[in-house]
Length: 184
Image (cartoon, rainbow, N blue to C red; front, side):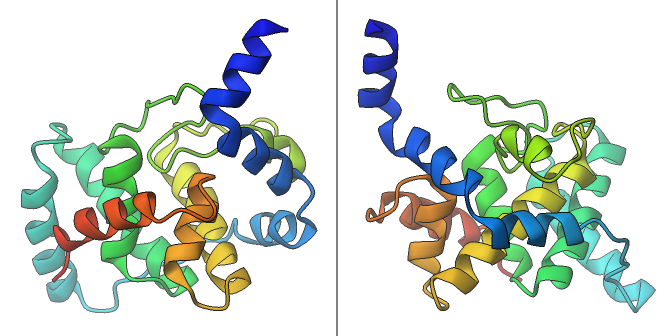
């Protein structure tokens, strides 16, 4: 009982965030429909230029060349799919996990975009692996887009909802600083 009280004090916003998300049927449906393929690059030259540039910017965080390129290609595709700036998703990833796809938070969020595992059960995909790059980015980008829509385009509010710090601006400010690193 004491541990639960301490966790509620320490991580109250994240714990209430999980409860809020579990009962949001619109977000549950958005996640269910998000698992479809798309290729975001229409021009091979533009893809090579962008991937080379961003690969250089993320090299210090992801040493493995193939993993780094997979992350970047998937981020680009997800950003296009949900119509969000690529730099925003990269800023969230930088803030949440520093590009560590195996990151796990103290409240159990996993992967690049720190997705809570309860979402797998909520949408009937219990076997999904949230440390898988494509899976994690699909969940995270869909959730962020949902909150942006829900907040009527207010990105600061959407980011606070995403992080579980609704009503506060510190998280969004941190994402904005990190997003600046990845602006083209």
